[in-house]
Length: 68
Length: 463
Image 1 (cartoon, each protein chain N blue to C red):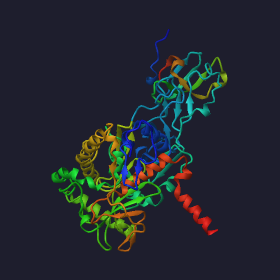
Image 2: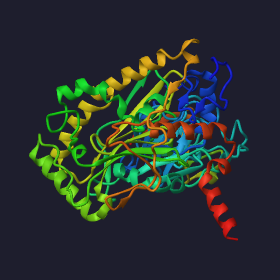
Image 3: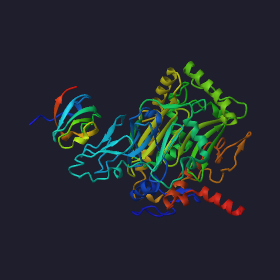
């Protein structure tokens, strides 16, 4: 299992993998330790969300794919 | 008056015909609980100043009665006041005093709100709620009405309350003495430094009545006057206007607002002040000249402490400050004090005033320390079952107030008590308790907005 991601350390441009397998890129971080704003790059579960921006809950982040 | 009662408010506790007020209204827990609903949930309350939140995302956590609220500017620049409580389980969504943020996130379960109050993030919205939660219904609770009055932000929880302008009535002219620049225009004042916050073990009405214009307690400040903390090196303030002006107490019976003022004779300039600093003295002399030019005859009015009903204290001159007396139980008050300065004032003036303000007001200010000691011990000595049986006296000057007061060609709005010779009166204090009792008794704004009733009566009579 991956280490728990420190949400506050995620900077814009960082790519993250979500627990449902989607990949998203950080757009901004309010630094509340709970949410980040990210744009979907891929989503095996719901391809329609690709390209959209959403708030991502910290516990939905599985791991960091690549740093900014 | 009867003995202490476990029950709450009843008529007769404020007995203005006899000039007496029962100690119960200060020390009775049931009355305190009723005040939260009858007063603080209905009246207009001071929340903060726009200069505290200049940029989108800026916020300042303030209070309205017992409620914690967030004053913030959203991404589009609009100012809001929200209840600082998550809609899910009530946790505070903001636990900082002030700052800048994109969202207010509840640390308990993670619900997150935009700076416009909209519920933006709900953990497991799709999975746990099956996307069925109507997020539009679960935004932060927003005040019913908000008013940005010359940069000062006032708000009320009551949608039925009159507009802030109507709530103020003609008292606006006196409030302006604190919120306009020293030149008397709207170009902007700003909050100087941080907000001072401290707690006093007394009921909130002790400081409220003190700032209505209780000049009788000046004896308490004699030691400060002897020390000479004033900006000209003597006394605690520059007070030379007392030598030539009429000294007035002004009350608005239908609104509950009141203030002291000094009224200079025609053709007499405001006396020089701030003699300890030539730069500051020159700045204020110039401001006074401009103000007199801009305001005409009204420029003869010099501000003195006042109170915007129910719990906002005004101190328009030395120091220029607003205080809010936040109720924290019948026996505890949290005091918050904002200091103001002209945005455009030179830095030397701001620095000088900051030093003087700190010397005078707040928890470490020499004048306010005297007041706190009085309120603290007065409250403590009024709590016992024996003490509660004996009302306070508010008879001073009763019957000497005047409507349509005019002196040396200037009419003064409000009901006026001229205390130039009398030196003191409890006229303004009685007005606070008159309005307090009306709020405690009235079930609706139809009853409280008596000025509207008067207007209707006039129309009916004309018909």
